[in-house]
Structures are given as structure tokens and as C-alpha cells.
Image (cartoon, rainbow, N blue to C red; front, side, top):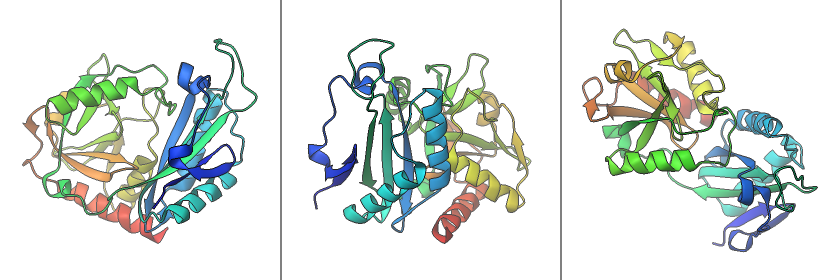
Length: 282
């Protein structure tokens, strides 16, 4: 089946979607994006992703050409046209085409959306957990903006993969974990407290993480939003990552050190179960 995308007002075959070589996203990485999960053919946490999309756009002074409700309607149509049951919808806004100049402004920002199908529920790593490698955070200072400028994340993931890990956890100059290269980072202390870094310009405000924290609190898990070090993460009872493309995954190894007993822990399993249940109910 031919994949259908949406570009600047039209549904088009993905293979035929074209943007200008002078687009400011291409020349300056002036752009933002979001990825909303699809489960059972429905968007998951869509309102949170659209709100973060608008916040990121405002930070770069980009003006979406359509209101959030219309963007969501197009996404639902893309899901239907592509027949996606599990996966996600990617949407990106860039500065649009203009003469190459740092201060130039385009009259036509580029809005692009497409779907990806992949398995969200049946994941072999749920039985083993995943490994992460800690890496000095190489990114720009405004990490709260979901920028398309992802070179730092690409380099971090390459380094992690070379070490046999499936994700990188980025570390600031003071030795505190910020977040994953494409995920939020959480640990569970030996006393059963779920710990994650508070929102600031240092991290992306994770939509999945926000939903998971609310579910954890409702389920009686004690929460602390504070900084934690790599050493504390390695000594934790459990480690967890959250993201729209993974939901909730247990981390069972950090820098070659087994976390807890080296197996997915009960809080990670419970939070994944609660999140999937809530996503399907929503």
C-alpha cells in the first residue's frame, strides 16, 4: 500500500513529497517537530503533543499555518488513509523557503506530516529490559524546544550503539542525568520512590512522562522531581525510560552495570500496564 503524507495543504504520496532546497529547516535547522503514538488506530496523548508543538513553535517565533484542532484532524485522516493500527504520526514545522540569510523570514512556513507503523505492544525487550550508556550532553541550551536540530542526539545514539546499548542517557557538566537521547529518564530508589528530573530548559517536557507520573501517583507510587546522578542511577532499584515511541520501557543496565537484579522491575511493568490501559481507554 502506498504511504500517504500531508504537505502544505495536500495529501500526497510520501515518495513524492518535496520541499524547497532553500527551506530554513534544511539550511538552518529552523524547525520543530512532534511524534504522537498511534494505538488501536487512535492518537495517544494528542492534546499534550499539540500543546508542546505550539510551545516549541512560539519559542522559535514560528507560526503554524493551521490551528491545533485542524492539525489533529489531518493526523486522524492520515492514520485512516494509511491503515495504521500501531505506530505514530510525525509532524514538523519549519521556517519555510527564503533566501539564505540568518534574519530572513518566509511568508510560507512548511508543515509536513506522515505516519509510521511499528509494534508498540509486543516488544521482546520487555522480558530483558534495555541497556543505556551515559554520555556527556552535547546539545544546545534550549532542550525544552523540540527542535529538528538532532545532531547531538544522533551522535549520542551512535556512541551508545557502538557500546552495545539501545539508548543514551545524557549527563550535564555537574554529573546529573538530564534525559535520554530520545526519551525521558526515571529511576526508582531502593525505597521505591520514582525519581525524575524536573522540567526546565535543560530537558524536553515529556508528554508520555507527564502521563506516566500522573498514573504512578494515582497508583500510590511516591514521586520526587529532582536531579539525580549517574551513580544514583546505577545504584537504583529500577531504571525506566518513557517516550511516545516506546511508552514505558525498563532499563536493566547502565554503562554495563546491572540495575537491581538485572531484570525488568515491578514498577516499570506496572506503569507500562497502566499507560497502555489508559491509552486504549482514551
